[in-house]
Amino acid sequence: MLFPMPFHSFLLFVVWLLLNNSISAGHIVLAVFFAITIPWLVTGMRDEHPKIRKPWLAIRYICMVLKDILVANVEVALLIIGPTRKLNPAFVAVPIHLSTDLGITILASTVSLTPGTVSTEVSKDKAWLYIHALHLTNEAELIDSIKQRYEKPIKEIFGC
Amino acid sequence: MLSLTIIIVAACLCVALILNLWRLLIGPTVADRILALDTMYINAIALILLYGIYAESVLYFEAALLIAMLGFVSTAALCKYLLRGDIIE
Amino acid sequence: MPFYLEIIICICLLIGGIFLLIGSYGLARLPDIYMRLHAPTKASTLGITGVLVASMVYQSHLKGAFSVQELLITLFLLITAPVAANMIAKTALHYRTKALDRTHGQELMETIRDRESPKPPSES
Image (tube, rainbow over all chains, first blue to last red; front, side, top):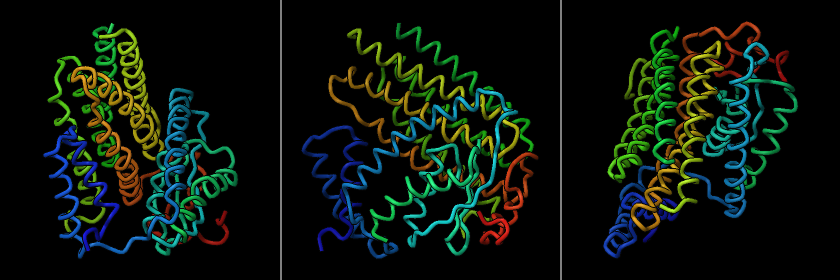
């Protein structure tokens, strides 16, 4: 098979061209060479990952997360400058229903980057995500927003 | 105007680096010190890119990329060592 | 250099510089390690993105061709920042670092450290 890992091949191709910052014929040939040989060499070592079922939803999800990062950054910056005594930090346990490691990793990373929360740990049975919130106003609302806004699309994207 | 902005931003970054250094020196726990180092390398990347703009050179990009990669790997290695007492398991 | 490009670069640089400064200020100021984690992971990500966008615009102008190399660093930092934050949080929990007294859900800390599920009474 020419492309055992099509997504990774594509990524290698793009990153090689970005790294050299050129789209000359020589670099394209070299990028194609790497895109074919490297996946072929490493395909035996990888774990099985779930396939992306809905690529358009994935792109929409990335755009939404980028927008949320911008908003969350400004919010957190204002919290940092504001009076520390009013901050209301908390540890919160969020129940998650994702079956794959990749899904949990993406959810945890998104949670760390977006609202005023940092993911600290996942329970052994992969059913709970523990987060630390910088300023907690309403626990039920926070859990609900994470589940609705981030977990649901991830579930749909990987179909699990 | 650009040269003035560069000086202002460089001053911001220097103050940021001093604050990080302060946290690195007093930081009550080891985790604080790792966090300070982590922030320091991000600020260093910004400072190098800024110098790249100031010197009108494209060569500094590679240095920034290398610092980004080494910075993450060193943070991960330090945390792993503290968590498990071993880097490679 | 055209005036509008200079304006764009200056604004991006200023946003970047201010956010990086706020991130470091938060690191020096906030009272406990778990709260300090928030400052560099969030504010610094946006700050470095601002500086990188400014650098990207400037290098594109310098070369006369579209330069997108800088996106590589942005992408790399966006992927690694949460992972680094997560590992530092784990380290802090592993050493039983005390959280601020008014932190809610402190009874969860031991459970988190042992990676167990929360006990029924503390279930939310």
